[in-house]
Length: 428
Image 1: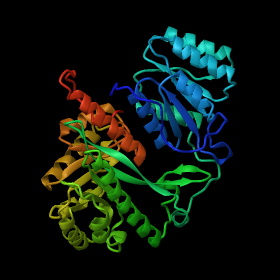
Image 2: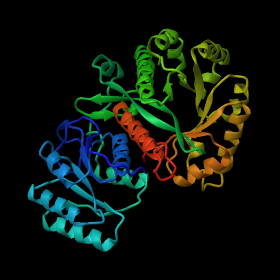
Image 3: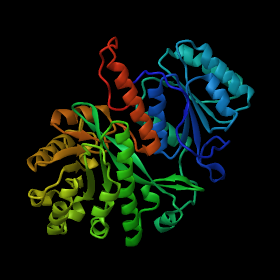
């Protein structure tokens, strides 16, 4: 993690609630304040919360927390206890004096006695003090906590949002998930995922708006995805980072949209544009291999390549894909889960990776959530990886913020007197 200094910054936009429990009281998106002097910790927690549909504001110290409370009241405050615990005690006392009614989550790498002492002070001030979190913590620990608190859960009876309505009202947006070279531990790309920011329900995942979507709506969403990914690649290139971005497009939509026109209009004009990847599912590809081959051939001159998503699910059909020119084969998450410990999954995962390489394609593991699985994938020869362990999908603004931090750390590391140390792809 980067230890570079950072100023308090707002992670996302959104309206906070003043009620603990966070089930979008009064139809508003939950809000958490993350108070920690280490920007990489703040980013890590914010990304997990964003993935759960929770807005965050990142704050470096108690002074910034005090100012933020004057603007909005959050559902929860995640508060670090630094080496000098007086800072955390002051924050807890201040929250008590303000009559804060949300949750307070202490977190620290210090001993349990210090955590218990600060927690007891909070309880004396009638704050809702949660069991303290010991650093370092894993993604699953935070995700489970948010689930138990019901922060980020959609309101009961919210139902499904119609994609056509979301498109009509400009509620759709695209979040970007980092794609990491597992061996070099470097950022090599990102994948765009659709989200809907509903005025009542907050940020919604595809499961809330994709099922039952009509073909016309899917075509329009696909056009938006291409447009947004190409525009984002320009913004990333301005920071000196040329990333090959990926978008998900159904085959039936891909044949109806003017990919060439969109690419020519919006693609980056910077040198060494890495191109674009369009993910299509294996299930869709095997139904019409001739169409898949034609699409791949037509897109190649545009520096746009196809990738097979959920690779391995239709195992019996894999041999039929051997002759198709696909840039990447993305392993189905069922192969990736527990591949570091499951004696059945591990050899299956290795077999699919080898098949991808035999096809002349890059093997991409998706859904990586455990460090043991990431290590196993490296030993199996997997090329790239995505997943909550490496970085959750995030709004473009947040992704740009991480790239700026990465660029700043790299610049600092290249100074003559800078300490020689490896630079991680993204703070997480």
